[in-house]
Image (tube, rainbow, N blue to C red; front, top):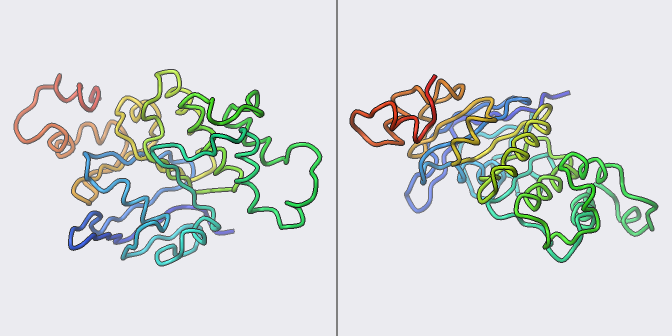
Length: 258
């Protein structure tokens, strides 16, 4: 069986002559909770847009032995690639169960969808348990807390059997408690999946990232463990500007450098 890992080579995305992603090489293995960080405009969201087929790109993106570049969005999704957006895209008037059931529908044929079911499908029940929404099975998505909506959207990817998950700023606007719960959720689902997180929250990154890729001006600036990228002078300069900086300034933006 082909190993489910993400392999990006020479990925380039241009908009009217502006190069947003410039020859990026990136490899992410299952179990490696990879964070993409960098200043605004670094190309982070554009990169995952390209992987998921939302924007045209040059270069190569391979996942699970399949070339994704040039494929339609729905065909990429069928290969086990899923992504979330900065604002959760759930059906607010429908219940948690109905949202997950709709997301799972593509895995069942027309006869199975039309047939009256007894009980909750196994994959839906398993996803609800994983994202911690079992007790809210009949609650309309619109009444969920901000963090819970993000967890529901992740659950919708899980019922589709997504093996590569790309999450765009999943903890934006969350409380500290919700962030901690989200981090633990990502660690659980990332144990046997390939997970890429675009993030600006440095505290969250330091707490939960297995490894970090820093983008700047569309290129990979640095890559490694949290400690390695925090200690990299190039990363410090990008986040703080040119010149000499005190340890206190570095720690304020990037956290304590070990």
